[in-house]
Amino acid sequence: MNKQKAFTLIELMITVAIVGILAGIAYPSYKDSVMKSRRADVKGVVLGLANAMERLFTETNSYLGAAGTTATPADTGTPRIYSIPAATSAYYTVTISAATASSYTLSAAPAGTQSTDECGTLTLTHTGVKGITGAASGITADYCW
Image (cartoon, rainbow, N blue to C red; front, side, top):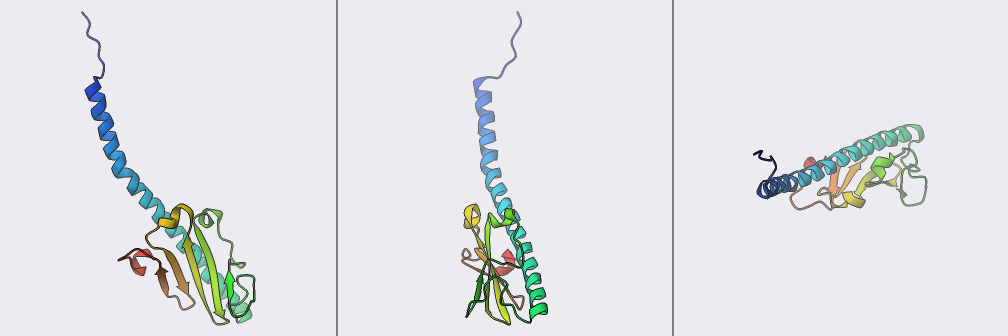
């Protein structure tokens, strides 16, 4: 008599349980890794925008006009001097706030699925000071930048 080789229901349930446990551990780690990757992308964009701001200052002796408006007292909004990649703009809103002709602050606020990022909004000033606002408790700018 030939005996059939097959999986028993118990073996199948053990396999499903192991896969479920692994997925329960792996998915949050994957999600955290994706958030860090998007944060790294926006940091590169903000630093590239800072370089564009310095080029503008070299050409015009002013940071005003970088957002496409010359409104008083501040030039605030989306940059016109630097194009934000679509992959980054889907997850972060990058804005310029130039209160005077000699100073600015760049901000990258998380949006969409990135809005739960523990670092909150990343900021960079004309002096190169990197900061964060709206971050989770215990999170520092050094960790996020």
